[in-house]
Length: 478
Ligand code: NAD
Image (cartoon, rainbow, N blue to C red):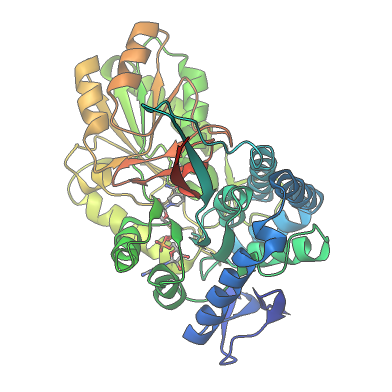
């Protein structure tokens, strides 16, 4: 069992109080490590170090192309250590090794993508009347706090760390209490790799959201807060940040729909629908947790989905052949099952799964519920587990209304071979991302963004860099 440390001001250290928290393997319930439980004093020390690192000319005056080279070295370390990190991720989070490996490689790719953008953050010259020169500067936002969830612990940390560093900000990252190990191990690998990153530019603090996350969000020394997490956490972080008018990027929940028309390739759609809700045991903001299917192909598609996922072995993520691992924690599984039960009391028929697995660990069956009404809890609420609801529709108009009838607006999928219908739905769906005939899909170079309760701001793509830079307008009388 490892006794892990935090990374503050270039030093690996314990909490100022010496307090620690246990970290579990959810597939066995075993304690696999302890991590420091940061105190308010540690938060203070971290913010002070981050400010000093931000002002340090070694970072502030660094050639932006050099920042890119450093990010490329970080990407190379991540690729080189990917398998090791994936073992840790699978052991700590419960997901399969294959899922963990692709998550970590995606994180490395994100570092590479933003490495290439570090020297392309350009301002503009603006035509104004008279003998004047008018231009904009885009300057780094400053000290940024990154509050990370437990479902893709390393990838979602790297998703925002990469653009922040590319833009010249400094970073304080706080992993979720249940899953701190991959981010700590990655930071250690980066530290040991001698990438040229000046001391204190990147720090990792472990501890509770209520204390460390809240402390960072409300700190006057923090210039920007990025949270990926649940809606209530987003609201708490935004309220806290508002005390100092600190800008926030919030990537919150989702209730994605796959909308399937009779002219779609149903066999392929069934596989993607399973991937979209049972990968990572359904613990994904962009999970396609709602299947909206045309009444003419309802029975055929439900059968194809159930046949497909019945082939998925459920078990410990490190076991060969397992397709669906453990949920992240027994407490989380209990919440998913509780919501499922409350939802089923309103209606719906369980046609597959529906229960916890009777064995050690936080395992649950892949679950499919048909006949779910649009006002039901199962249709409206994010369960964040392996539960697919099925609702049928008669025409395009009804499909669109159903898809849009949730508080969330992250990713929706459309399955059809009718181009006109596909693009009409892409236009009219109230969400930040739409995918046609594929689900789920994203790339470091494309915006990951939610509308409505799914969030504020943009991750990934060149647009992400807007958050990490401040615009300054300069006017010169000639
Ligand atoms: P969570 O909201 O419980 O925790 C997220 C992070 O916030 C953790 O690090 C936690 O310690 C911290 N936190 C908790 N309370 C806080 C507070 N009061 N102030 C500051 N920080 C606080 O989320 P989770 O359970 O780890 O993750 C699941 C949620 O995240 C789901 O709702 C999911 O949809 C969402 N999510 C969204 C995206 C996206 O990109 N939109 C991606 C992944 C997960």
